[in-house]
Image 1 (cartoon, helix red, strand yellow):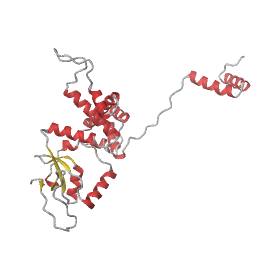
Image 2 (cartoon, helix red, strand yellow):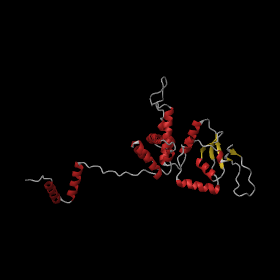
Image 3 (cartoon, helix red, strand yellow):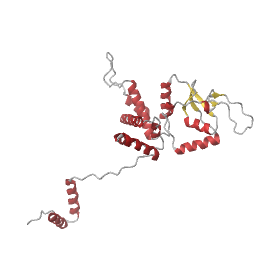
Image 4 (cartoon, one colour):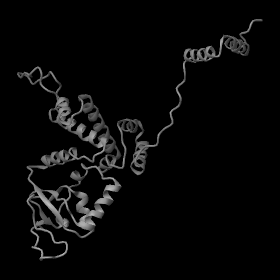
Length: 286
């Protein structure tokens, strides 16, 4: 069944009547006819529970207000998976705007770029997408190091690095971009070892707080323990905080602290305390 179609002209005065199309170029569509590519969907972090409920109420009361983005000629959803699911559940039609793309790789890049432009992404999700972009560019170039051009070719002395270009693009520092890249690798490793491709979008969802520190902590855990910790993180939204054991103080620090406190109470008091301590330790004169 063809997913997109032109809506019939609504009767004058009909309740909830909508136009068949608007200047933005969208069309009405049956959401059941739109396809979902699981790999595309996994690129998109989960909404918060509050955002999901607000969207559900909006669609129930007003229908689909914002067009879904669909790959032209393939009817595959690029953006708006949750709206599609809700419209199917609530038996609503959806607005669709088609996007021309040459191949699947271009579709993935398009989806990732959409996510990086989202204002409601968590700080951790934004960090992941910047880092994933950096890693993808480096991988495309075969990880070639600076200063080692192909034989017979030269590189301009001040050629901007990938980190520099992305730092300029996102208004962050180069160090931040490289930290983001390590964070993205850590998240990908956690998701890969977990064995469920959907776990990445859950970890980057709005209701889960996965920081760089927690990602490193998860990677240090044995595989079985890590899987249980990931389940707990997704369920509770954060990892339980571990109580830190107080660091043992060095003898010199203890002595300096004690001397400072004794001096504050006067020389006589300090001499008396030191003598008592000497007797307790068996250091008194015989």
